[in-house]
Image (cartoon, rainbow, N blue to C red):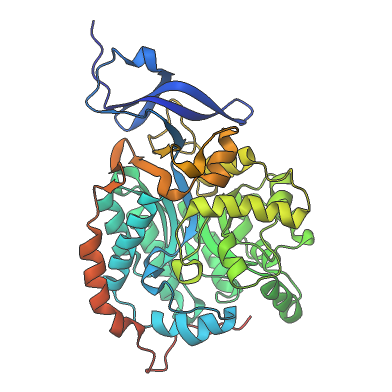
Length: 450
C-alpha cells in the first residue's frame, strides 16, 4: 500500500538534534518528514528518496536547526530604531522613548509589528515573546504572516485597574489563536512601575486562569540597589512576596539578579525562566549581565532575546546567541563557558522552555511542531568547517538563513519573504513618522525613576 504523501520533505541536509541527555549533535545526509505541520520523522536521505510529498525542499549543503525564539522583545518598537541613541537608561526612557510612545496609534503598532516580523523571519526567528501595547494589532499580524508568538498586553499601575483588566481580557481572548500559534501571558511592566497590590492581583489572576506572567525585573544593578534602598528588598524578593514566583513567569533581563536572589528563584513553585538580551546591556553600559551560569546551575532556563529595536537596534537573535557565549566567557573568566554547543542549546530547547513551549518546539524530533530553519554555510566566512557548532555560533550570521518554516508552512524560501510585503510597510510607516516622533506636547506615558 502506497503511503499518503507527506506535506513536506526536506532532503538532503544536516540536522541539529538533541540526545536523551539534551546534548546537541548533528545527523548528516538526513531528511525531515513533515505531516500536517508536525515533524513525523528524521530519516536518512536515501530513505526519503521514494517517499511521496506535496512539497520537497532541497537542503543540499544546508543545516536544519530548530527555529530561533526571541524570548523577549517589543516588536512594534522597530519604528523607533535609532531614535534614542547614546543615552543613559533614565534619559532614554524619560526624554525620548516614553514621550514618543504617548503618540502611538494602533496603526503604528501594526506597521511596526509587520516590519519586525519580516526582520525576524529573515533572521530565522520562528517565535517571539512580545510585551507591548495595542496587542490586538500584533496578534492580527501574527495570524496573517504565519509566525508563532507569545503575547502579553503590558500595563502600569498608573493606568488603574483597567490596565490589569485589559491585559487579562487580551490574554483570554487570544489564547490559542492563529491555529494554536499564539500563546498568551499577563504582562505587568515591572516592579518599579507596577505596585505590590497589582502584582499580587496579577498572580491571583494567573493562577485562576492558568496563565503565565511576562515582566521586566531586576533589569540592571541600579534597579536592584534602588529597590533595596527604598524598600529593603530586591525586585526578585518583590516577585516572591507578591506571589508572582508561584506562577509560571518569564523574567526579562535579570542582569541585576544578586547571589542572594538565587535561592529564591530556585525555590519558586512556578516554572521560572529568564530572557537575556546582551546587546542592549552593552549599549547602555550596564556593569553586569544576566548570570547565565548561576541560573543554569539552579535549573532556571535562560532564553535568548533582543529586547526592542529602540534599545537594541536589531531583532537579530543569532547575534544574541554569539554575544551571550562571548560575554559569559568574559564575565566568568572561563573560555570553556559557554561552549558553542551550550549556546545552541540556549538558542533551541532553553529558549522554547522560557516561553512555555518546551514540549512543542525547540528541537527537530518526531511530534514537535515543524518550526525549522535552513542555514547555508557555503559562504567564504563559514569555510572551512572544522567544528560545525562553532561555525554556526561564531562564524554564521542571520543572513545565512535561507529558508524559514513555521508549522510546516514556508514563510521564507531562498531569502524571499512569502507572507509580508516589506516595501509597502516601510512606505506607509515613513508617512507616519513625523506625527509619531513629535515630543513637543511634553507628555510621557510613565516616569522612569528607580
